[in-house]
Image 1 (spheres, rainbow, N blue to C red):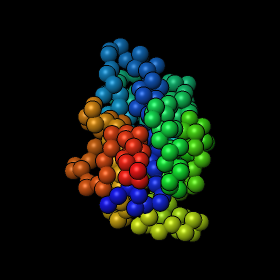
Image 2 (image 1 turned 45 degrees about the vertical axis):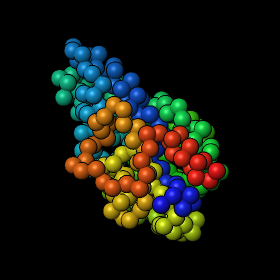
Image 3 (image 1 turned 180 degrees about the vertical axis):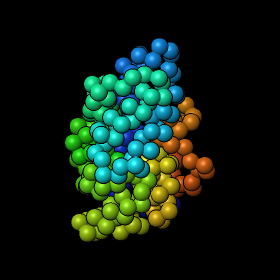
Image 4 (image 1 turned 60 degrees about the horizontal axis):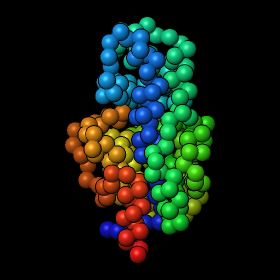
Length: 240
């Protein structure tokens, strides 16, 4: 299998293109400062991961900022800190402040010349619109949890994407390479539907699963890269 066997890249955004862990850590700092003890990065991200998954499963119709506000309150309880509505709302509204990975925009510009680019994200439309400005590329299609009414890893999200791509762009499943950092949210469900997958393992050096829930067993993936830039370079080598 070669990267050039496909003509459509479907992307997870947060963790893959946008450095949400840096953004989450910064947005949790005001709450952490109230805890009266040092809270390291791993503890922040693991707390976030656990509660985000729980909230998304509990209320599939909630917009992502409302999910984040509930996550903030749950983390506050974990840390023995009183909930603060202003801090929770600031955390909920922080998505637009999360930075892009340094390689994302350049890699996307290159890949745009060779592929149709599609977003399948657990965030809301307005949040992604702000993030999209940092990515500096126009996507051919954008599908969010707000559009679908559920959150990945629900297979409903992937089926929605596949149906829309078939209807609106005449894209068949064999032409799609799903490209994502999260094994839990993306690679496992994508593989279960028979999609080819490229794992962007941005935590290869740090280890652990960070802000994404861990999986009991790593799924088989078709490609593995430590960054989107590495994936773009691999494509360059393929096509000469």
